Image (cartoon, rainbow, N blue to C red; front, side, top):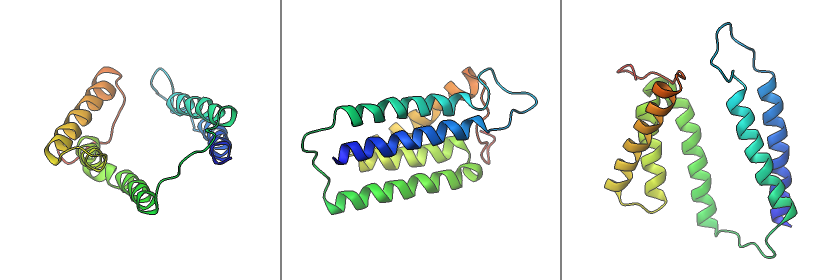
Length: 143
């Protein structure tokens, strides 16, 4: 039953997310997909994934222990903090920090987590800023 509840909540969130994307105002000059393109893709993926949970739930899902749930909650707080420091530190530095932290919490060694954070941050910067031409948050060094 918990998988179906998760799927229902996810489906409702996907519908809300898609609706919210449709009310984003169109700027005078925008990129090829427009401001609602990426949120619509995320809403579609979330919707399809949620439908799967509703239609094919696990017979007996195993919930994480209380300390694991607390760790998941703390990871959500870290992601919220990421959104807050993104305009201050810029995309590259903020993404290095959050990716390294989350990778470390998933079991990587600290040095490996740092390399992963740097690689992910630089890779995403090159993909979105340089290849797709999307504007990302500039940091104190201009990138």
